[in-house]
Length: 96
Image (cartoon, rainbow, N blue to C red; front, side, top):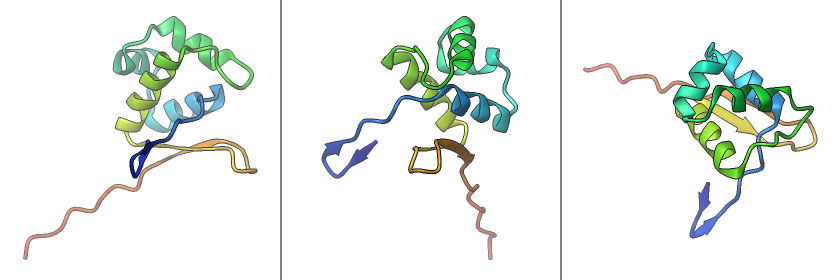
C-alpha cells in the first residue's frame, strides 16, 4: 500500500482472515494456491495456525495480492479484531 510517497507495510495476514477470504470467494485451498502461486500445503498450514501464520513475507504478500485481486478487502485489527470483506462492485453506467 502506498500513501503519498511513503510505502506502508501491511500487517501479516492471520489464519482466520485467509479462511474467511476463501469462504467469501468460495475458493478451495487449491484455487488460492493456484492464484497466488504458493503451494497447497503452504495454504493449508497457514490456515491451521492459531493467529498469525508462519508464511514468509513473500508468500504472505502473494496470498494477499491474489485475494485482493479477487475482490477481498482486509481489515486490520483496530480494537474490534482483524477481518475481511468483499469490495463493493462498481455499478456499470447505463448508456443514455
